[in-house]
Length: 220
Image: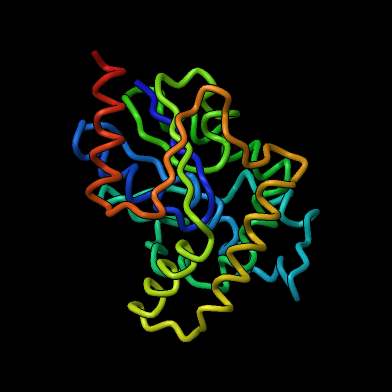
């Protein structure tokens, strides 16, 4: 079984996907972390300068970037656990631009499909139900008001000790929303057969209960 969870930045997609995967014993794949890993690689290797990407250089390297996950779900780059680093605001500022590149998306989609060949999966991202798994048995599109999402993200960054402001986080989130929904390649859109889940006024438990019932109904 394939469950596709798409949605806007900082709307709780990953949290929900992890909960569902754990509850039903499915494999969880965080596609957003994969694009963040490629972004971190680009930043570390000088392929992003002043917000501009050296696309020719990145394209020549993309097939050799070893993106993976540890058993605990942490993202890895060439075997190194980079989970904390890819969640930084610096990576967030660049990830939408990297993820918009056609050759990056092609490489990651191929890898995502390969990762899910031998098991039931819950995969979250921005084009799972429209591009990666258009035939998924269940598609959920998660969203929330932008101020709500920004506050959640701000609280998360503060808890990690990162210095920023709510307004900075809000502006970054809105910019990412714009880039994700207007890019030419595989933009963020709700699949026609996806179920909309607005969690603006929900707790994590309430959101999980709604999604769990949706999965159970499809399994039955």
